[in-house]
Length: 610
Image (tube, rainbow, N blue to C red; front, top):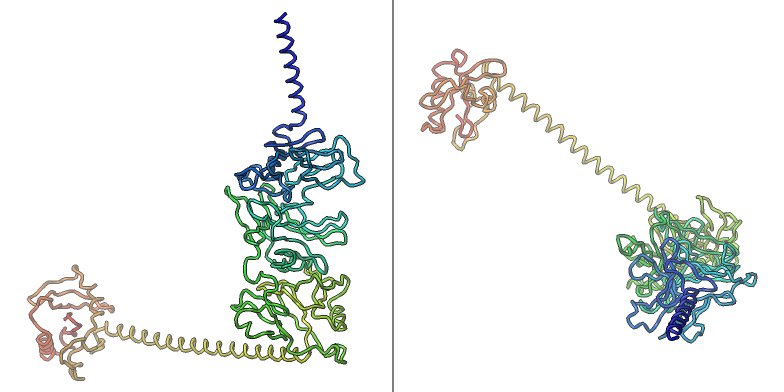
C-alpha cells in the first residue's frame, strides 16, 4: 500500500512538472526566435534576435547596469560589444526595481508590464481599420525595425519602431513628417550616457518653404542647419555624398523626409545625435570599433547664422564673415572684435515704396552659396527665374530669389525671400546662385569696382609678363655670351694644341707669384704651351709614354691632335732647380737655336708644373 501511494505521488508530481514546463514554454520564446505573438512574451534576460543575427531586442540597464535599479526595453547590435543601443521603448518611464514583461495586449498593442502587472509603456493603438486576430505578432527585422502586424502575416503594419526613433537614425529610417499618418520623426539625444531620457539636442525637419533640417538645443535654439534642399543637394552640406552612402530627400504634400542607405549591406552604420558633444555624428563599424565617419557642426562656419542678417561665412577667409555686396557691417566695432552676429545693413535703401515701384532696384548675383534659411520663404514651382525676378521687383518686401530646383543641372521653379537673409555661406566649389536685391546705385558702384578690378588684374598680368620676358631676355643674352666665350676658348685651345706654324701655340702667362713678365719679343722667342694641351698629348703623363729620365726629371713622348710627335721634359717635383733657373735655361736654348730650325717648340709653367 505504501509503495502504491509512493508511485501515485511521484506520478502526480511528474504531471505537475510537465504542466508547469508546458505553461512556461507557452510564454518563453526560444533563444533564437525573432518574434513574439499573443501567446508569448519576453522578460528578464530573454531576447529576440533578428533572422540574420544583426540586431537584438530585450531589457537592459544603461551604462552596464551597475546598480540594476532602472531597466529599459531596447534594441542593440547583436554582434557588437557594448551593447550599442539604437532604440529605446520606455526612455521616459524606466522599470525601477521591478522586473518587466513585453507582450501583445488584447487590443493589439505592445505593452511593457511591471512586477505589479501595471502598464509602464505601450505602443500606439492599432489603426481603426486593422483587424486584431489571435495571430497578431511582433517581429525584429535585420534592419533594426521592430514591426507589429495585426494579423501576424504579411498584412498591414499596425506599428513599427522606425516611426518612433530615439537618438539614432539607421539606414532605411525616415527623418521628417508624415502628414497622412500624423507622425513626426525626430531624433533626440540621451540625457547622459547612462540615462536614455530625452536630452537637450534634437535634429528635425522644419516645414515651410524648402525642406530644411535643424539641430536644436532646447526647444527653440538653432545651432546648426543642413541648408535648404534644392532638388539636388542640401546646400549646407554639399560634400555629404560619398562612395559608400547615398541619401534621398523627398518633399510632397503627404510626406517630407530624409533617408539614407548603404551600398554594402554588411557595413554597420548609425547616425546619432550626441548630447555630450552637441553634434550630429555618423559612425561606421570598422576593425572592431566605431569610427566617426563625419560630424556636424565641425567648423566655425557650420554654426547657425554666424554672420548675422545679410552676412555670409567663408572658411577660406581669415575673418570668416563678410557682408553681401551692397551691405556694410551694422557694428564695425563688433566686427573688428570678430563678433559678426549683428549682421549687415544696406548701403542704400531700396527705392520700392518711394514712388518708384521698385524700378530703381536691381539684382546682384552671388555664386557658390548655401541658400539662406528658407523656412519662411515662398516657393513658386512653375515659375522661371525671369518671372521670379519680375515678381520680386513688384514686391516691396522681397529681398532675394533663387532657383528652387536645380536637379539634373536645370532650373525649375523659384524661391523668394521676403525676410532678412540668414545663415548664408560661400564655398570654393559651385553650389547655387542667389540673386540679391539692391538699389541701382549700389549695382552701378559694384559694376564699376568690378571693372576696376579687371583692369587692375590685366595691368598686373601685363607687368608680370613683361618682368618675366625681361628676365628671359637677359638670360638668353647671358647664355649667348657664355656660349660665345666657351666657343672662343675651345678654339683657342685647339690652336694651342697645334705647335707647328711659327708660334701658333696658345700663349698665356703662368699662374705664378714671381715677378716675371714677357714682352712681345719674349713671347715670340718663348711660346708658352697650355698645360691641358700637354696633358692631352702625353695622355696625362702616362707611364707607357715615358721615354727616359734625366737629372731634372722624366721625358715623355707626346702626340698633338695634328699628329705631330714631340718629346716633353717634365721637371721633377724633387728638382732643386727653381722657376727662374728653368726659365733662363729655356730662354738660353731658344736664343742659341731658332725654334723654326730646331725642335724646341715651347715650354709650360703652370703652378708647380714645368
